[in-house]
Length: 344
Length: 289
Image 1 (cartoon, rainbow over the protein chains, first blue to last red):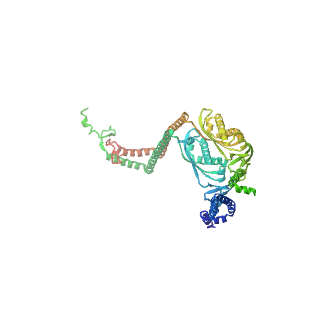
Image 2: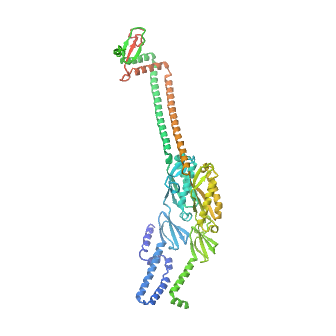
Image 3: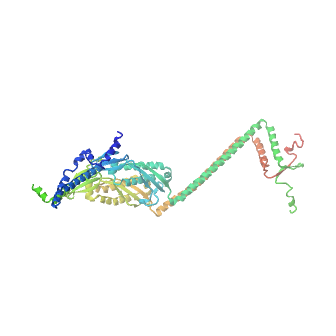
């Protein structure tokens, strides 16, 4: 089984380059239809007669020339039959066969036979290849932005592509006058319909859903035409504000970034404030737990500790008079102002 | 054998005669492809249709293939069997609320009655030409009755169906069937309508930016305010257990900070005058309590 495919290709592939005898035997129906017996001999007779008339004479050399003529013609016809009746259908292809214009069948991949050319014609259709149509220009294919109206009466600049392949080769060949144009228009129509249903911000946010929706809608419409194509997918490549209003949109994103900065700042300061509160509360709680055990002693101890530290680093004056209340002055006391005193 | 003799005498004439007969014989046959309908006319009268359109019988069974006609007497008019495109040039449409729109529409149709088509239009190219203005008029008529917003709503389908029906009434006279009518594009015309739409978008976005900022500030304030409240709550829960103890505790802390004793850089120098009555000096004075 395995060597039959490629083997057949090789052995059949040879003949129409080389000998013609074997091929004539292989394909008996065509060998019969070869107009060798009638056509060439009648023509032959005519030529011979003509030659006799013009005084060429019926010499053996003339006969040989006539024979060559006949063989040459036969070989040409066989070559024609061989070339036009064998078809190599690639793995990704299907061959649609029409006999005098009438559809008779579809050839699967492999080496296939049909009647020769004026009778059968084979149109190869590539069914696997995915075609892509880009839609990103202004009206009527002019350069510019593809502006689409959204549901909230805004304009969006949209670039997208449609991927499609041929599903049904017969339908593809026989149903549509201009399949590619149709696919493009249908996709465009479906896209605008989908965009018109949602707001500008939804288009930006829900692109995946829109792609899906448009692909389904386009498929539905194409099926209603029996277009024989399958929409593989719609991809939005770019969806954004038109260049005329880009600055205003940048303002919005700048504001959004600013707000994010605000919020981050607020959150971190909030965190600090609460963390500090928790820390201080925890410290006090620890102190208070101790303090409760022996309030008076703890109080005294802390008081002396603190005073020791405070007074160790400051200048101290102990004033005797009874009526003086303790007070604190900022900066060095009396010593400094002294030189300035006389001026006053 | 006289025929043979004549042939013998004048072979080239005979060859010509044979070729002419052959040509006439061949002209009686014609090939009808799957994509075409052949309308056979005899003295300009439609006689029969080969491979006529009928909804989806399957290819190969609709009559396409080799067909016969009487030479000279009968002629063939070819009619496309496929779905045909009708692309309308851009149309300016004015809605009831005075919005101008530039609309690109297309229709898909096919010729289902070649006899009628031939009688009315003569050939299929003229059908397309005849349908274009009708489609344009139907479009302007239908959209002119609506508000602009309808174009951007699900009601659009209703509009399209109405246009299709209006077009179908005319198309039937041409032996054509309209599969559907669709709007490919609907754009605001260049100039003031487009500019005012841009202006509106710009304003909306600027407003949006301002409100985003205001809202963000508010949010941030809420966050900090809430944090302050939570901190106060924590403080009061802890310190409220014994306000006097807290007062003392906090005072001690405060003294250390104020007099810069907790770190090595004093915050300004200080001199303290102490009364001997000061509590700290109680023992210093050698008093007994």
